[in-house]
Length: 231
Image (cartoon, rainbow, N blue to C red):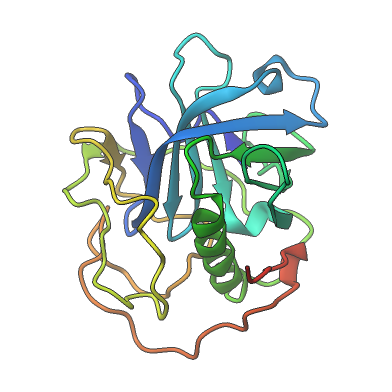
């Protein structure tokens, strides 16, 4: 995971070449525990992007020390969906810092969906993480963060809205029917330094051609400490 590396000036989301956006919501709150840095203090309200390679959080406040948060699937562990009797459903887990990612160590996180949709988002997130981790050997440290070497560009709309069944399963979009607003997603020409859910090179910013068919991942898996709970 890296801190303040996934946004551009003005609050736009910055994605890699070949990275696709699967789900998007602009109504999520994130809390962190286990870190003393100012950037991790207090609740953050903002936008959440589920891509083929990671979670990206963009803070709605430009006054906070945490403006964006990149959470590659290969840095996640102990992820769970929680459905409390009282209060909003949420996703919790642990995240490891990427080398050169502007912070060190490990932190616990909690994603709260005030407008609902935690289960739909969480199931898609866990499925994507399972697929990505199946392409990644277990290592002590995740791949280091590397800043873009060249300029960034406005990503082509629709940013990554694949045809149904594109990834071997169909994420539910009923709770998250909206795409990111126009002129809010940018891309670099650098590919991600960590694996995604599919092994192909598509148009930067959005899916352009179906990948080779592969066997679907198991519904339960414990690689990298991630657990899938079917609700």
